[in-house]
Image (cartoon, rainbow over all chains, first blue to last red; front, side):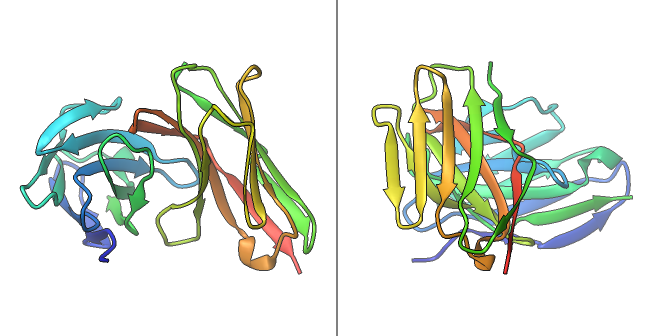
Length: 112
Length: 111
């Protein structure tokens, strides 16, 4: 059984740039959620995708967007990067309607 | 109403002691209460979880106590070991959607 994998693991961008983060969900999982974890804080829900549709969003602006593909993998896109976007971005997969999240190791984004 | 409040922020326990972390919630629609363990440089991993129809769940050295009327739940780690040193997050969600996390507790177990 393959776990959740994320890429890249680390990246550095400058303010105003755009970034795409990728996630492969655990085998058999059809739901993907993205979280932002600032240093020393708990993960904050960005959005969730189920069957290629966004089915819920946290308190994040529209410059945070995503996609889910037919194989259930997913992308998180952030446009017009701001310094405060520096964080660990976590992808979690799950089965529909279950609360058990399986996290990847995250992509650490630094915005200079 | 969507918040999950966690305490303490940090905790130091002697090896063999009991670690206790507490959480409180407001939203009575929450129906799943997991605890996650996170080591530095890693993503959170599910440790143990409970649903509100039971008051306690035990898995090995880890126990969740749940008080529905007080809207509180806690994690007890018995016989704490240095390998348990990590950050612990309580969380809550409804129907598997939008898990809300607490701010985390950094646990250090002294050898």
